Length: 319
Length: 319
Image 1 (tube, rainbow over the protein chains, first blue to last red):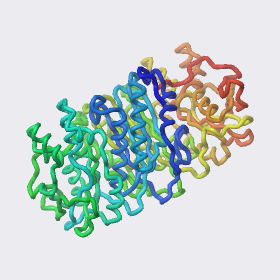
Image 2: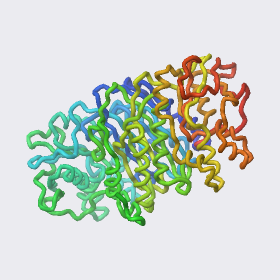
Image 3: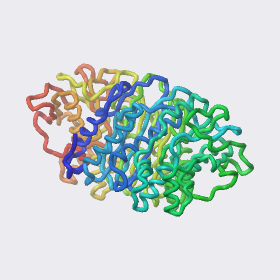
Image 4: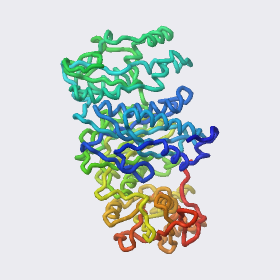
């Protein structure tokens, strides 16, 4: 289904929009009651549910001129699917809250939802409900539900002697964002990485099975998120610069912007890579060892790079 | 805990705010992993979960000058707890997404969260996670999880011959909103009803046990929500004016504003009353019969008032 190209949300109305969105969302076998009632009802098999909520705000987390509606949908879904991945679980069901200006093109909302549903389909998850309302800017609120087959992997389990390992692209999206912010559209591969992250959706569960002691998805920035693990686990984490192969397009962006390309890797967060700690003989295939866990020093939990404090950009400040 | 009265969200920062909020949220026994990780993990006993998401936008669903932060918290929680009530279930866990301007007083966010947590405590539910970020206006996204003991009561089960019944205050909040919108603060009881709705949290499950055939919470307006039931069930619903005792304060507001006070009852939606259909010998105590279900006419499902189309205000238009 498509809306006329000049139709706004005000033109199609709340119920017209909901009807069009609902048509897009295929319902999985776990859905006992889908969209359209006061609440959805979902079958739960393993006696527990993993749940996480994230917000995306236009002008802050995305810009309509930097990414298509479909791209924004992919990113919004990926960010949430990744939170369940980081627990060692798999997402099954999501809800979307969409607050938007009345003059938003209705087709934007529809394309956003299509991208969102496509990303969810990649892990077999369904959009089971949501809410739409008017606001001054586009705000997207997503809640994801899922389950683990092993015990959930928390941030708090890292042990001195563990290694720190990374799975998935890291720094690519931050490089893409940096060039978009300066008005460029290339290197294309980085811009695409920003628009449609490719989180390693199979790696979370595999890491749990392999015995990961702590895990987090890199969303605030690699060093910032390593800091969350260090803090929760009460340990020190050292990250090793030499562990990262800086890909050619990031080298090119660094050269063009006069920046150390490693800053995109150490500070970037939009790829939704996984960072985990493992006993040093338990790192599964597909992960790269990038650091080590040690006892916290006298000043408490901390993250260092090659044994020293890092003074480059390290992540995202929300207020 | 309290923030200095002039501290803004920018002053206390994302992590300062999250730490203060998390302190407020007592965790129930169903919470295996609470706030602070990539996701929460909740124990699920009955093999299913009921889930619903709602948005509240400043200037549209609430105004900071019309209600305290604590009131807004109570309302945001009530609105979502009510969605599970309307399925015949009970809420157990909620997440909150709070998008807000950097200059929002940090104490507002804390008071909002306190009101929210207090309302949740009234049904024994816990706030288990969330997200905070910056936006131009306050947008609150809530997801509620719960469970039913009976089969969930849907909107689609109303049968010709059933009666329509209402439980809870209806029209009070709409009356309160009408006086606030004109710059008044009384009748106080209506203004308070708007600021802190009192949904009949025990009535949903009792209705399911009594054999309710369809149920909805009144949030778009009584006639609009009766329309959702009629549509989903493929029936006609007639509402009887004489069934409603118009309370004195609503009479007073009607007289003062030159309006039929019944319009607040037929069009209002902020009390989160429950509207349900029952076989006519199965209406439980505490419910008032306000109408009847019949076969849909040749023009399809419809709602009438005393057998005729109603031409007053009937609810809320979102775009």
